[in-house]
Image (cartoon, rainbow, N blue to C red; front, side, top):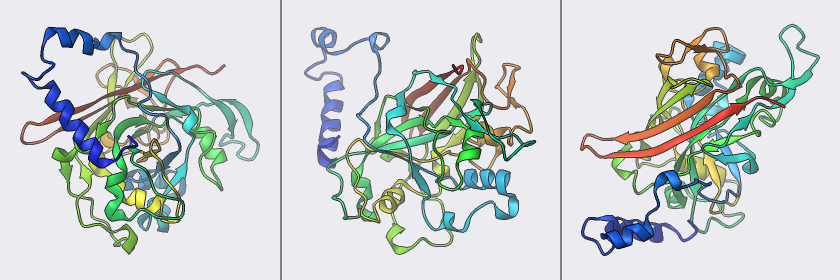
Amino acid sequence: MECGLDVWKETRVEIQNLLRKGSSIDSDKYKTNIFVPLDEVEMQLPARIGDYTDFYSSKQHAINVGTLFRGKDNALLPNWVQLPVGYHGRASSVVVSGTPVKRPCGQMVSNEDPSNPTFGPCKLMDFELEMACFIGGKGNKLGEPIPVTEADRHIFGLVLMNDWSARDIQKWEYVPLGPFLGKSMGTSISPWIITMQALEAFKVSNVEQLPKPLPYLQHEDDFNFDISLSVSIKPEGASEGGIVCRSNFKYLYWTLKQQIAHHTSNGCNLRHGDLLASGTISGDSPSSFGSMLELSWRGSKDVQLGETGLFRKFLRDGDEVVMEGICENEKGDRLGFGICKGKLLPAD
């Protein structure tokens, strides 16, 4: 990951050649010594994560959340269309898919008594459908921004992400400095990093940006990707889960290149292993909203768990959240991200 773009490309080609039929390792002798059955493997985090930043790059998600908490007329704050909004998260609680996450305790207030907080288990536990990129290469030196035209050279690849969220804790604490304990109890990512070279075949046009961003955020090339995403919830004891959301990475307003250019515009240095998340990915249709907060419209309606006959407004103890990502194009090329899953455990 630290070696840089040229090495990434060379390594990918070499691995592809070795896995082709008729290669130097295409024999039972080598296959037995090299390959391990997947059911015998315990997946780990794909890299040692240095710093973790979470952006807020889906315009529809920002509009939905703004509408819920500030009203339709003040849904999108003026700075949102001028810069990729983000905050610094907690790298130590990023966990690999399959790791359970415990329902957190924290301060919260009720609608009946909004000035006097109580402490206890979160009542409004949520998922957030996101994707995240790993930074690779040597990074940039402190004080030296990464130009938007060179930002792609610093992206090693993408993973799926569930940014677990305690909505009632978050609501009470986030003013004036933003998310803290409502987010840091756990963030799940998939173990497989899909490189940007592998994603080239699924590149699509960027979302139109109005007003036009400032010059340091402008790039003419397309850097958006058609990645179909889904979220299912499997209740404890159920034989299967039900899909609650279908979305797509291509709905993001701010590109990965713009996120990196803005992140480093003040001279902040990025290092290999840093993790930059997209923020919740929501589309225009209600079925594409990437969180229970939006799907249940702040708990005002039930969300059906696929064909299970079960419903949720927010997550219950024992629920397992499963996220999947798949790319397909007209040529028949297909690429999977695997899954990102985690089970919600009860609070102590």
